[in-house]
Image (tube, rainbow over all chains, first blue to last red; front, side):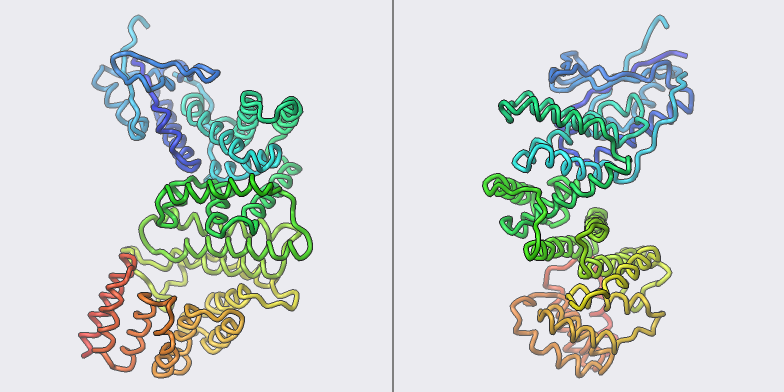
Length: 110
Length: 421
């Protein structure tokens, strides 16, 4: 099965507006999604790491897919039959609900 | 596929509750003048959690994780901003030491509760205006943010933000501390704290629509703060009475509306939907409120709530309730209390006497455009068969500001006036 990377971009100013209660709710939604992906054997390999740089200098992307104010928050590698299915899978992730961007890239040579 | 461990489970309201106690704890270490630094450190810890837990999973001890990261964040802020001048190193040592102890450890639990208690006592300092005290308590101890507080009080964000800024400025300017007051001052402060908690509870209890979740959270938070004081060494019988009153009232929260969101009056409520755990908690504190001679307004209100909670369907002891209302009016003569007393008068002596009892309330400025006064009068007139006059009351009540379920209730009543005419 082909592997796809879901790159999750945050708009940090959006997160800052959330209250503790809302932040917890967001984490719970993300965790539930991740658990579902693990349970259905669709999460491939490492479940992802946070790429955010420390020391107040977040890595800012300037690629064609996302606005420059967004920060790459983390990524998941998932398995899907094809690109269409990977997109469907990504759409179920709560990230977009919070007004953020998910970039989908197929991983070759694995 | 990944063999990652099962993600940890996050306790309900963990973030909100931890936010409150962490702010209180860090404020004690940093000093009240740096309340904002404490708040920012806690916010930073929660943001970090949001940015890492979804990918790496929830840590084993989520509260401990937040606690440690918030301390580290405070250390960074102290170093970066040099707010403590040549005492910076000492403060960093202090914060580092505090970061190594973790919540859930019984020793530290007590200390954290003490921090929260001190914090709410400072929030209710007489130098801070009442409205700001309420907002500040919810923000710092309750872990609510500006938007949630604004929603709960039907105010706009800017108004709440302004109240908070004002409160923090007063804390700095007046050099308020987290020291517990003593003697007569302690008693006064306890009264102020009770008032703030009671107000919080009432705001949550009063509305029946809209942001119902945030409203229920408000009731829960008020009850939690009451219990915090009730379990401390400074508890008084009045505090037990306040907790009893809140628990007994909160027990009925879910029975007050039906599945369609329509109002269910006390007499028609399904008692099976009353929360028995809260009723038991209420009676426990009600018993404990009996020690001492002082009878506060909370005592009497708790007694009224207890009389309702004790009653089997349809057999409410209205004589006792009326006596209690007389007692309450002797302590605090307010037109809202007089209006509620009239409802008990109707049950005991009938609608004619009840109608006479609310006559003087017409001239009360507090109750001008108060839909409940009109609704109550409408009911009394309806009882007496004066349907046209009752209809006028309900019409007028519908012109006042009221919630959507209340509007539907008044319309049902209005229809009743016509069908009996």
